[in-house]
Image (cartoon, rainbow, N blue to C red; front, side, top):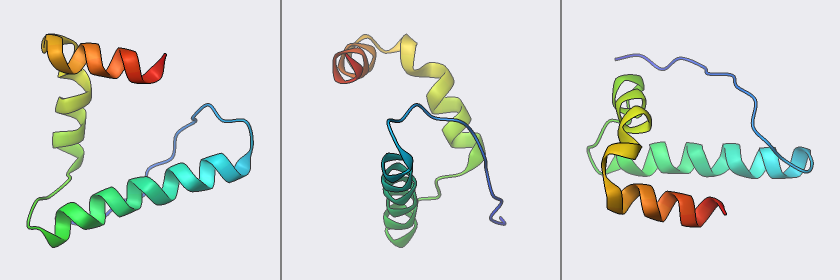
Length: 66
């Protein structure tokens, strides 16, 4: 597998929030890589598309983003 850049818009109040979110995502990917788990584009796409099908996960995500 090879690393590819991804660009997308995200809601934020300022550039500092965006930089913090970017840093957190990179840390998440790196931590999982160090522990032997690949955070791949395919797996991210599958997880994002299926979040609604698990009632526990769906409820937690909705509560978190309220």
